[in-house]
Length: 273
Image (cartoon, rainbow, N blue to C red; front, side, top):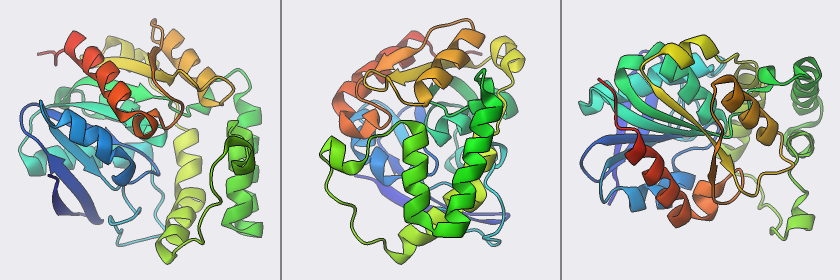
């Protein structure tokens, strides 16, 4: 059973959920809120204290200044604040998608607080050989949002990321967006997508620091933009990516299989002193 809490921060509030007991494990996304991680968190709570949350400005985590950008560095500091509030000196961390970029920033900014960090499919476009082209594509997506709205921007984003249109992968049509959906879409396109994809991982610090950094990649993610970003980052770190079940959202598609791989990764790399 998840316990729900809200932490007041210097510039807003962080909604978070806590399950289980034992060593701390944080699951974080961006722009995903806590909900897609619920099934995975339930499975892992048998052996760990699992912390999920809505990232700053998304869902149930409002900001005092809604116009403030959401950078990986600010989101990393939020994770440290959550650990402080919950009384944990250290934790392991799984970040997926934009949350994987948060995790990479946290490993550099708060190395004493983290043991193993798993960065699952980070969209770190700056590590790609065609980074300038990808930067321009991201700028075009953001411009599409401001000119044509969220639906057009999501279609452009999905096409650039390599996701098939809904009618081609069997998904049901998306329901009419709620007011919260519209607010979250605005946060993503206007204040989060740019800072997240422009983050340049500090490879030297990640390689030399005390945090064990593992790059995760979905077994079904071939053809997605996060396939080459994950492989390039892993190569820069001198490792290979660990393959997880499913695709970009494998933690929600196959939570049991994803949990098995994650347990194996974490068991191989206990927190370092």
